[in-house]
Length: 366
Image 1: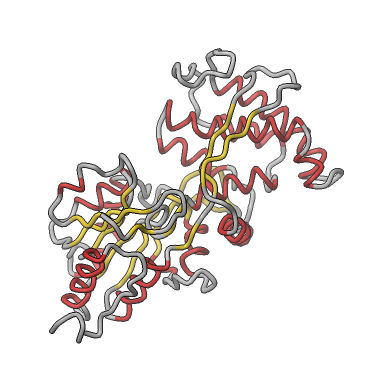
Image 2: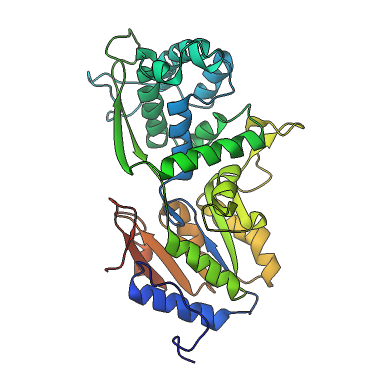
């Protein structure tokens, strides 16, 4: 049966035509065969990083449920106090470490907590205009970038997650919805913020850099709908937090319309009142790198007589394990970013789908 006469039809969208054809044929071949596909979320299912944009939104709007003492504890938690590498100096060329940065951030946070977070003595617009806010914003982003560059990706992830502790699951989901809606409406691209040149500080003047903004990928949403319509189950495995991905992937306002029970992402421990703790829940795999394959092996493969996914999609080294682990995977969909997954592109199963970094849209050209 030709694709033209088949009931499988992906929207043309901005797919590379060859990729679209291969995906249609894959769906046609495995429809109603108790098969499944696995996708990363950030920069694969969407353009941008959900967790990062929530982190940005928290800073911009000072949405924390932590008193200064607890905040001070969390920003230092498990972070070695050794000096950072040479490239992580301040603008005066001085070597930095977490102690210097955290001391400044803590001092800024006390002011922000007393004048906005706990009392609203100042409006959000007024607090954003203070030197303390400017200093806090830049140094939080600087420290956030320094952690994976000096220590480990796992430490950096947990540091980011712990800033949500003190909130209930429902509060985190509500915050995720606010942040996602806001960041979908903002420009995408690199933002540079500088710390205060007025305040006396230990870390001196630094610049924080981050990638702002999110975009929905309608082609991916359509792919998920078509897979499901043809009896192929769709799973998401993400290194962002469970509550965030649940909101983006299941809320019908975003159009992905996936099933909550098919989402596997990072989880913090909870109190009996469903309040997030600053402790990771290691009862489930750490859903990054090999942890993604472990999640498939532990929770998903047993539902399908031990078979691997027919299709796996990802964009970065954190996805490489699940992309290459399973011999019975037929197609690897690489949402290609410059310098990412270059080795995996050599795999004969790989489809390379490029995107326009400026617009976030898929690029139909090779």
